[in-house]
Amino acid sequence: MERTPNEVSSCSVKVFLVAEGRLLRETLVRLFQKRAGVSVVGQSRYSEFAIGLIAASQCSILLLDSPPRAHTATLLNDLSERIPQISVVLFGMDEDFDCFLSAVRSGIRGYLLKEASSSQIIATVRGVAQGEAICPPRLCAPLFQLVSREFRQRSGGADLEAAASWGLTYRQRQLVVLVAKGLTNKEIAASLHLSEFTVKNHIRRILRQVDAQTRYEAVDVIRASGYLPFA
Image (cartoon, rainbow, N blue to C red):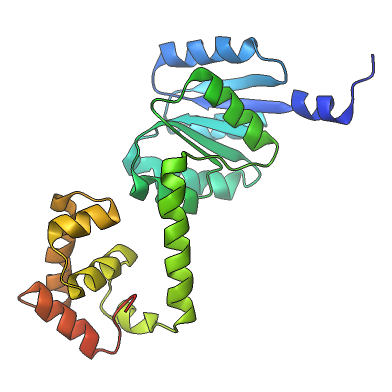
């Protein structure tokens, strides 16, 4: 019997699975074997050889189980350079906006939290295979807010070169404007979805970078240079 174009397309979804736990890999492989239109063409734990195996498999979707955070950006950047056509889905992830944003900027197409069910994983793989991008609704709202804020910043003609002269990162520029508004560390942490410990570390670095003694002196120094982000 001749298959329709949609059926042929669905049968071409090839998945490569990377997960540290062998039991998890075997469980997911059995799960995919029970679903029509999706097949696992390879599997691996995290290792220096994983990218070579992924490339050799000619998969269309890479399914990664909560990759080690320290290596996530490097792994995704290497994949983007070596296999630009691949679509990456992360699962087993924490509800961490910084991690999510970093992954989005690295080009991932799907982001699933730890509580995602097996049916959600299957649905996400199929959705991504059809050109969709999928993420938890709770992370969509702050992402939209960030895009809107960055657009307003660019439209306002903010002097990014002045900020760059201090070596301030994007996150540090966010902190500076909130400090300038008089927010406490606790309020800044809540606004940026960070811990108070992380906020304190960022502020200490900013003080060293601009050679200031207090947070408000740092704001004055940066403002005097002609740049205050998101002002």
